[in-house]
Length: 259
Image 1 (cartoon, rainbow, N blue to C red):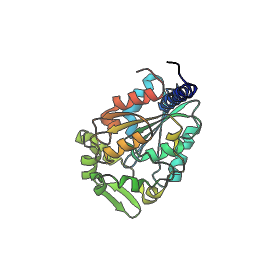
Image 2 (image 1 turned 90 degrees about the horizontal axis):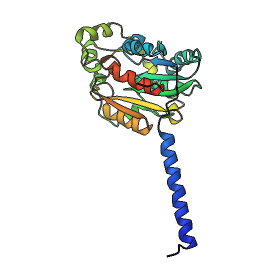
Image 3 (image 1 turned 180 degrees about the vertical axis):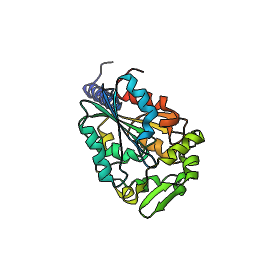
Image 4 (image 1 turned 30 degrees about the horizontal axis):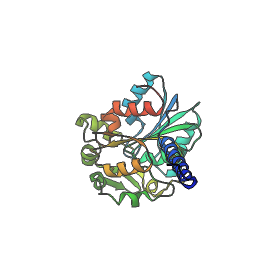
């Protein structure tokens, strides 16, 4: 039977729509841009040394790696600390954030040198979003009850640090990390991002399935919302220390490196 002009037009329109959908799906997948630099940002209850296990694996791959010392004072000052480091990079750079530093990755990730974003059990708000309100939609993680304030400074109690933050690490190692935890200022928690770099940059997310600091289902929600390439790691909140091989592989993938 000969196809009518109207039927033919409908077929062509449907084909064009299918092609457009296919293009959008492809465009949403992370692009493996070759990057020579990696900038790592730590979150609360930690300092830059928490990346040591990952750094020791990235450097032999020929990558230039820098760990930012996040001041944990205010969000603008935290952004500025990362932006200064990004400004020193020569060429494409993968920006990686753990925990609270996902706020920094989300904001500072719009920097033109940033080629990809990696979130490690990290916050990933939208622009202007109230992260506390988002997190309240999920069960409160146990570590929250372990935060102690001395005036304007907050830190985790030793019990909460060992059980809820670093629960899958040998106790002796976890106690060393507890000893160097950097207190955060209350003002840090009130800030909001003004950009959402994950809306324009290829993004990757490592969910910690045994996390007692950021709810794993909240992590899954944020990773899915941003369309990130996602892996799940059977680890505590400190997967970057307990499972550094998995985190390193994800960063190498984001950097366009063969693993």
